[in-house]
Image 1 (spheres, rainbow, N blue to C red):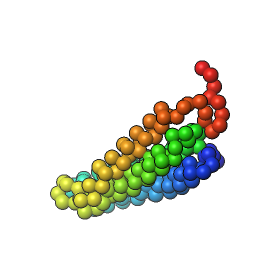
Image 2: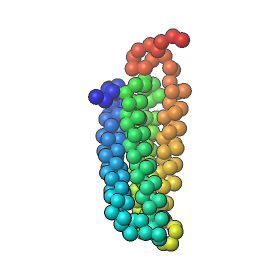
Image 3: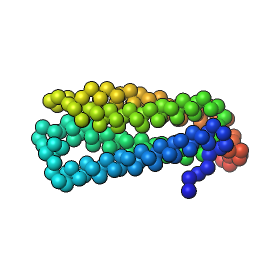
Image 4: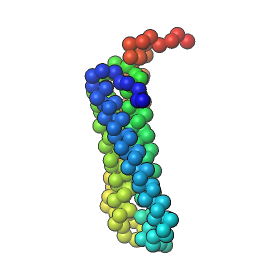
Length: 162
């Protein structure tokens, strides 16, 4: 059972990230199964000597998509545990950027490996640095949020004295 989030906007954000996290985790784990099948059946369009760019890009897309799905779940759990005193704007911004990263990073990798020339990935790879920037800014907003809170309450409870 998922931890419950505070009522209001953080609850809606937490719910959104629970859904996105589990769906992304499922989708990219399925992609991993497909990649394993391509290995298992020795598909030359994936394992051929000239396909190393495709193999690398798709493997990175699978890894980033799975990891970002786990990060979505962690963020949803975090929203359920922290006080929301920094204000909903910080959480909404972090949420939007985290969701953008979830789409841009792995999709850029998939598209970069779909069509490529020589050893260079396709133009879809240009989505990757944009997604990475979204992830870095989102991580910064999340990481700096506790410093902006007064630290004395978490969902209405007093924190234990040291």
